[in-house]
Amino acid sequence: MFLTLLAVTFVISLLVSWIVARIFAKPIDDILQRIISDLISKAWVKYLNFAIYVVGISSGVRVWELKRYISPQGPNMQALELNRDRWVLEVYKNHNRKPAGASLAAASFLCHPFDCLL
Image 1: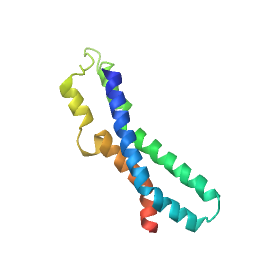
Image 2: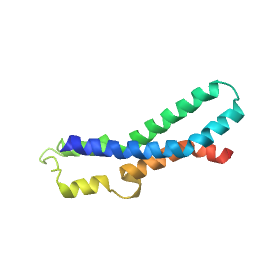
Image 3: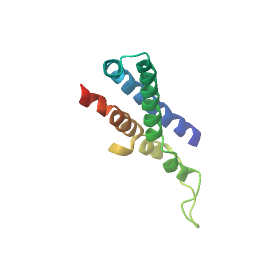
Image 4: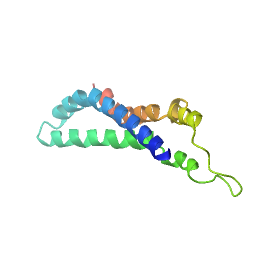
């Protein structure tokens, strides 16, 4: 059950990162073409796309928060049971802590300088 939750949060973060990368693909390419105007700009576009995925996925999949389902929180406590209610809670947490929101915030923050240059 834990591995499935980990996979679901990974897929959500990957999907959101893909959407952000697709939205910012043309502005990033245009700006780097204008600033660098060399073949190296294509390499920088690939690097920034990779960075969008890394930042989006690492912000959306919070392994340190999921570890409470596999290890006890204290000396006389048990690990939390991962049931349907906890699934809903983990996937749809409040604003900055849910996988989609955290991925979107981190990936868009990475692309923000390109918005300012437009």
